[in-house]
Length: 392
Image (cartoon, rainbow, N blue to C red; front, side, top):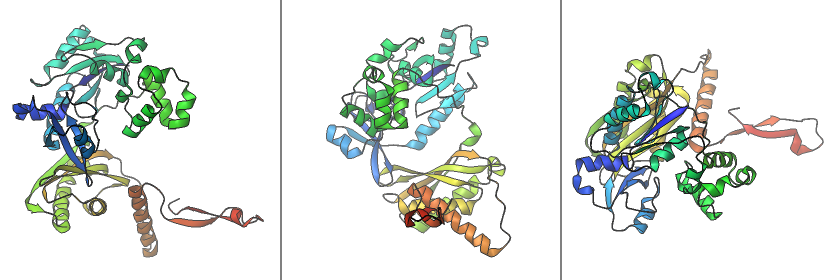
């Protein structure tokens, strides 16, 4: 499939420059909170050695002169959402990637646009004025992203299937992998995609596991990841400004409950359940803070959702007085079918198992085990029984 990548580099910072023109020539680092940490969201184009998600202290140690800007994620998301709505009028196959990056499926658009230039011009017209945009077309999302990334402002390029020479000298930092994996590649002396693609796939799999095969394929420009068109019905967001900044758990939960009541009154929630959401807040003197909440069993009501959010806040409390609260539903899906128990004893057991499932989801693995007979006839005591997760 031919894919067009629309890339607006440093999108959050460009949004801020639209509001504060003085930031255009000022070295800046944009920050946000994740749990108790402050991380880097974006930075000025002239600042080197910084990556998204890097701890703020590490970034400051590299660039002490940079101005710190607290992120206003609500504003950036709203601006990007309007851009995505406009792109949806060009192609029905639009995937929202990171902030400032989107993909359009081009198959079948030949009937609507007489040539490639007409399509590119139509795309540029829906991007608000003042934003630097880069466009790239290729077979696959990753090569399309690279072609847009290395174009001049306002430029576009189409990559043919044979683009090994284009990829060869690109740095490993362009790979969509974790900071830890990128550092590991540097520790092995691998600096460019060409160096990775020249290796056999086996050693990479031995060092990186399943991710090693992905790294090897991407370094060769092979990306078979399908396009995931956005569904406008799947994004619901509510926010509220608190009467006064507070650190009180009771006040925060009261605000969350009020937001959830409004969300579950939405028409989309009458036939679907919540699979995941993002709880965000504006924290006094700290800036934007957010925590994602995922549900092992889709949630269908306010109280169940509030219970899970309460656990998240208890483990990752906002790092200061909360001024504004918001909830953004990031994934809706079908209800999970489950027969209700008839007897109270069974119901209590089911509730306990549900609590264990949610605890294991938060902590990242099995936490409660039971003894199960495996080979009771064995002469070796260790083989007779084994510990297995109680949720199995």
